Length: 185
Ligand SMILES: Cc1cc2nc3c(=O)[nH]c(=O)nc-3n(C[C@H](O)[C@H](O)[C@H](O)COP(=O)(O)O)c2cc1C
Image 1 (cartoon, protein in one colour):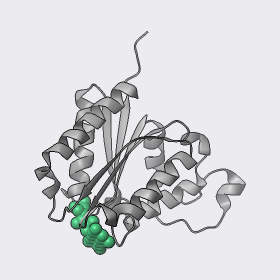
Image 2 (spheres, rainbow, N blue to C red):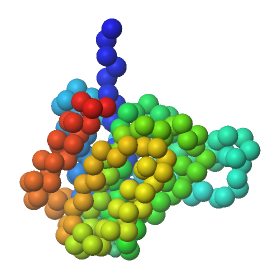
Image 3 (tube, rainbow, N blue to C red):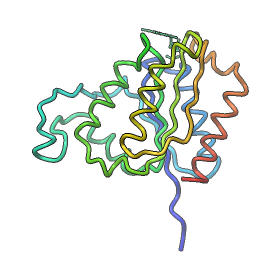
């Protein structure tokens, strides 16, 4: 029987094209692709993803009733074995785009998350202590929803777009993380 091709979805929460988040997410996806995986990428700031409005309709009808780009993105999420979630640190937290995206998980059937592999990508302008709260938030959500954290790739001290490329060790770790994620699915 032919084995199903592993699928990896990158979700970029930075509004900056070619920024450090996208650069690292791309490198994870490149590793995944070169290991034979299928890859896709969503760039949140170019999508229409409205914030949760706490209408609680999801608890009555079983899904979120807001009709925007989250509907299509959720299908991509369901079709992927591994999600690469990237956000830079903005004021000790994730970007507004990433927070709105995660808040919308409130209305998603928990079965969607269970066993899903997750790679976290968190660049910050300051040292790694500035990323502590963001990393802690994301690393708390992953097991809470029954997901499996594969790796957290932090990129402290990055500012100019793509400056993370200068950190060869981190870029190599990102590539290997993608490659290994496909092998381990
Ligand atoms: C609005 C804004 C807020 C930021 N807040 C922080 C912060 O609180 N701590 C920090 O270390 N870096 C902060 N940064 C810097 C970014 O995290 C850093 O430049 C990162 O590499 C940007 O990633 P990107 O290129 O993917 O956009 C902030 C940047 C912006 C634009």
